[in-house]
Amino acid sequence: MSVVVQTSACVGAGQCALVAPDVFDQDDDGIVLLLEAEPQGADLDAATKAARLCPARAIALTAP
Image (cartoon, rainbow, N blue to C red):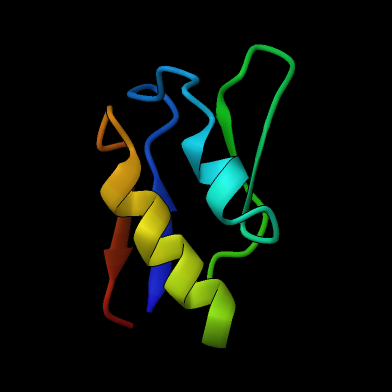
């Protein structure tokens, strides 16, 4: 699975960085930064949870 973020949709809630800190971070404006586009194992589980929690739906998981 690959992670795709739509930074223009991000509202800076920060749930992604809290739930999956090895996959996501935030820039100085609070906008999502993707650290790992193809997470594995526990990081993939965390990224999936982050995508579900994102209030702006700015995170998507895609099949390779």
